[in-house]
Length: 272
Image (cartoon, helix red, strand yellow):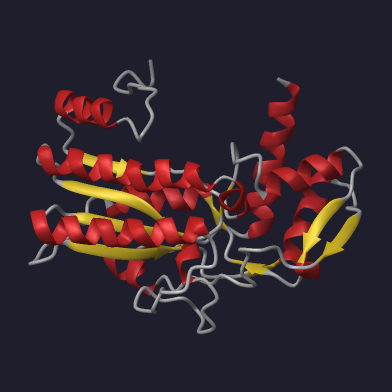
């Protein structure tokens, strides 16, 4: 088997006793914590799902690391913490005190929680602010899936902010490469805590993103232009200088290539 060292355990992050027992049993050397309730708009409809997964879930992971001498915790934050910041590109040194959604607020809280555990218990912790991750096996509530599905079915797509939004779309392979590399960069010092942006460093206008899907599917999209939605931001743009200096790596997948990979996967998935 190619993944004989892999073990899957289905468990609720908010299960305090279950998570404590898992950490005690496995005695992990390193933990890469990527699980969360994601999505901006859903956080407005179902706020408690975010508190349970993102707040309580983060705490069970931190407590597991503290009680079992984990050597390095890497966890996923989000570009959403930057809110409506006007200074671009977004830098890890920017203030992030004005979240525009509960999802963003929980991710900012995660950063504070992680920092406090690094300071109190000297647990080496690294946070990664992900910027609009996309690619094969992506979430069905995100634009690549929604737009591809609608276009292939000859249905209209909803284009918010009249297509003027810009996103620093980051291909999943680039994200994975960054995560793998950063796990070897263990923070040290009085507060062993690090924070990095991980984005493509090239914001793409929604129009180009839609054009890439049209090209990959070979079909034109019928567009319904709408205003901005509550909790959305107009633009994301990652300054990846710190990540490049730490691991010698910068995400670089062009949107057209990444979207083609997603559309090819989506078609195969629907045919299964």
